[in-house]
Image 1 (tube, rainbow, N blue to C red):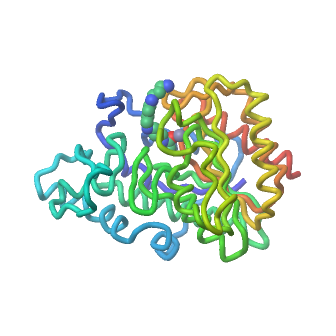
Image 2: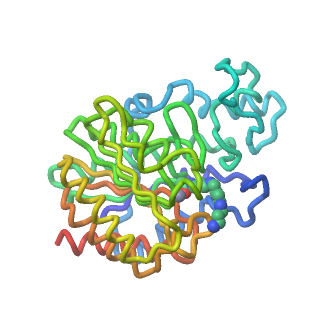
Image 3: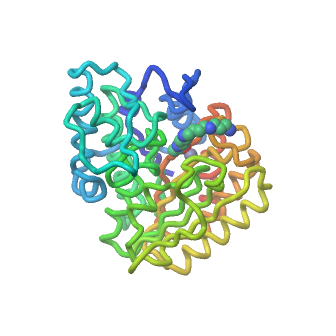
Length: 344
Ligand code: SP5
Ligand code: ZN
């Protein structure tokens, strides 16, 4: 399988990360994640392909151009205003307040960032923008008429928590949504999200869209980040009613119950009959994951791949979470092997 990469992800390398206000050491969302995935997939014989530069059209259609502008130059203005190198805002627009955007670069950071767990540094924009190139290159490879029909983009930082006008949950730019938007030109699109966490940003971005299905398997938000989004009564609205499907799961779920839920999700994808499938691929449902940890055993990833492969449609896999550096390499190799076995 073609595996698309860019070295630019490593420029997003904050010196520290917070969880519940505490410094996390070693940091969870770090460049070594992609190094591990590249090494494992390369060793397994897959082709590592460099990302090809892509224009901004889909990026600016998905995200508020002012958010994109803040990602590009907000950090420099935060520094010029006296902020520290690692930008983590500490004041956020509570719903009880109005909607006046701060003019101070320090205050403004809290406008665009939704949580304290998503540090932004000088290199963050280069990394996030490169992830768009990775995602759109992988989409091109998956949908090319002479292509294999499936490709894997090693996107980092992850994307599915970023909404039209905010970033958070380690995510700066929602590259799965950008790829899905670009793929729309070719017909209906289904986004299947198997990250441990609900993809609140992706859901929001296609909430009212009848041509993009969003289906997510994730830890029940009653007991997991992102807390406010991902309940099973969230189904979309207007023309998009019914094109959002949430399957919240209980931590500790056995592999076979997870695979049953994934099979149901894939039935929904088949019913929707999309021209293209985008998979938000997170390995953080693994029991050993330090951030997620739904309970999956290492043996689950091959069968997950076979179920995804059985969809047998042009498919682009995009990396979301997965933080156990000792497990994610084999998980990626097993998912890809499962997909290739099912499509052979
Ligand atoms: C893309 C992605 O996976 N983002 C995850 C962001 C999670 N942010 C909140 C982290 C909460 C960590 N709780 C630790 C639970 C230990 N099992
Ligand atoms: Zn996650």
